[in-house]
Length: 271
Image (tube, rainbow, N blue to C red; front, side, top):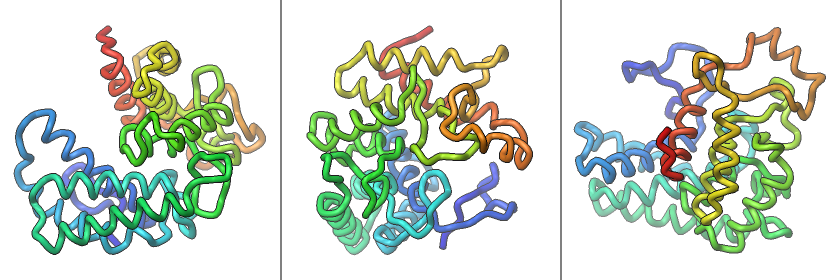
């Protein structure tokens, strides 16, 4: 399988890590298209990478793989399917694919749509963490915004955002999922950004601002945002083991900063 970690120079990562995590390739295709549209210019040298990533996802989209959190390799995760769906739609729109590549990508997009409709929605009307489970995961927010598997006003989207907020949000911060034990299961800064963006996409500006304010309040004195904060834990008894294993919570985390900027931009907050 294609690797999941790379060096800053673009080579394969040298640390020991598992492969076969598909959401990153879908996200990259989506992000490349967004970047190209925003700046009105193609990224030179990206054509072959688009073709490779598209072919990879077209072949393997329906296979179990690691999720966003690098866990549960034996499951098919709905947030992963949402990322692939967005990435393949974006790849088709680039005009870089030949007829066969575009056809395979379109068939995969149709397959994801049908699979999620048939098996990815729980009895309560919200998206599932993975196929066969009725649990939710905060990564499901991406299926609404920014990936657009469902538009913000679709009943499944409305139910998913509401259920994630009901189960996982706490005073502006957002947990990953209820069974989380990583560093005790704290509240993640980047997930507050995702929930805020979903409120913004649905026209709920005040709710979105609340999450932006919480994100900003988690910055260190030097302005760095952490991966998660540990004041409210789902599994406090598990915090120390991770502290001993890997040290303190990752700070700064680029993803946290990126989500803060995305939400601030969506809300036109400039200072």
